[in-house]
Image 1 (cartoon, rainbow, N blue to C red):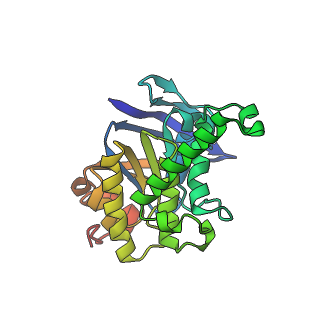
Image 2 (image 1 turned 120 degrees about the horizontal axis):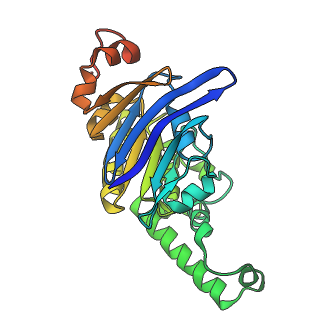
Image 3 (image 1 turned 30 degrees about the vertical axis):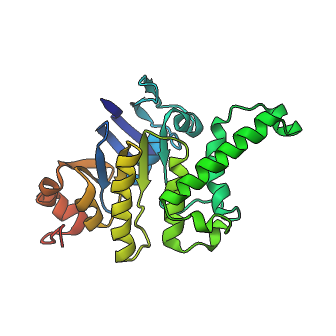
Length: 263
């Protein structure tokens, strides 16, 4: 089943075409990498897919949690999240002055069943659902080995754990599609290896489809089944990691001629 389809999407900022006629089909359960040099348009594509930017032209279709194909081209980010798409950011965007636990709890609240009056008057329905949200949040933190830090402020976590917390918070929204924007940025080699294991694990455990932007080629080549390469807002190559690593356009535009992607 096709989870996400981008059809000839382009976006203009003033007179600059940041992305031009981008096409992508993402199948259920797939782990797809989107790579390219700085300024190639990768994060701009993410922003269009998640409703942060609206394409100047083209269409985006997403198969929601109920299996219905929706045109999300001009929808708002919160509407797209409710349908089952979640993302992380290149620059970590946690609620830094909230606790680790509350960062997870807040992601569950867009789907609460109790009414505003229940919250105001602290009814049994309110306490019951809040207790269930806390239980699920702690269980999610246990998966990421962060439950022992649930009372700490998010800003006090080491960098690698902040990355893990941001991924956990995205998962708390119950997505079927997860978009990861440079999750290994700022990580040391050991943290990157741990991240690769984590991505594989959550993909299986949560039955996810994943779209990944990343500069770390060891990570991309190690976990992605298919890769799309952007340069100056246009797709210059697409295929398996092995095919892409041998593409002369990729070698020249992304890393420079004579450089081995696997190095």
